[in-house]
Length: 116
Length: 116
DNA sequence: CGAATACTTAAGCATGTGGTTAAGTATCGG
DNA sequence: CCGATACTTAACCACATGCTTAAGTATTCG
Image (cartoon, rainbow over all chains, first blue to last red; front, top):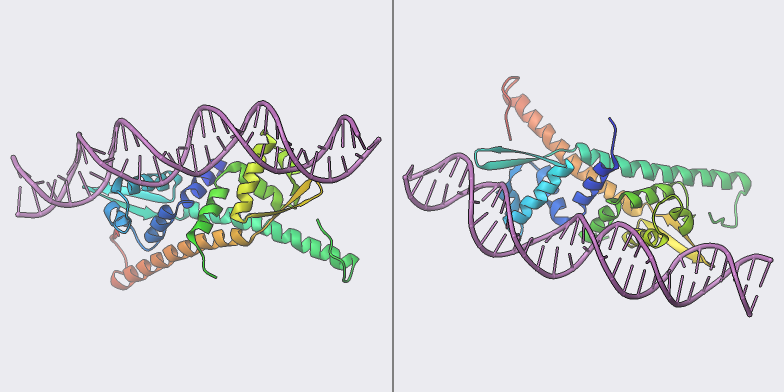
């Protein structure tokens, strides 16, 4: 159950590229072969394969080769973890703002702005 | 209201580094000066400043200089956008699985596994 | 005013990233 | 079995990234 920061490194790194996000988006609509995935892009097939390798290394995608066709599937597990990391930090921030509001309300019913 | 993919590029790129995530985490607990932010890290101050610049360029952080002190603040707007991108793709995937389940339930009450 | 403080800028460097082309391997279809 | 198909591997390249150290600028304090 232990989480290494390296997991999130790889996940966000993977999502930082528009080609890879497009691949994720495509795979969210259903599994596909390497050449199906490569087809929409104005890019060589090896380039796409490299992106897919990175996606697979990050855990966002799983793949299995049957015959000469490799079929890629989205795995939403790490996607959830990446989402959760953001949600948690945002919650922390929101909670902090709530406390500040409460503090201001308790001390001064209204008027001058306090900086933090 | 138009969104460019470059926004998400920069956001995820910013989050892909452990030092920058630590800075975001720190800032989620409250605004801080550059040297306060740099203090916990075994890294030169210019290195931290570079990270902060990237965070600011991505829109995750805002900063203002008063006197000789620059105070940095978290801005959760782009954080929300990054979270939403993931949530939407995950929703797409989940919905697809639901449809597959429905299809299988409608055709075969139970038994052999279909691949996709 | 002069020294300490808080950055800020600049230059340089090792490594990582995102692409290319060329050539290789392993099925499948006729 | 021979050729088309579907990757796969390898070598290479340009540029981006994540640091470093050194030197510069702008406030503040005694």
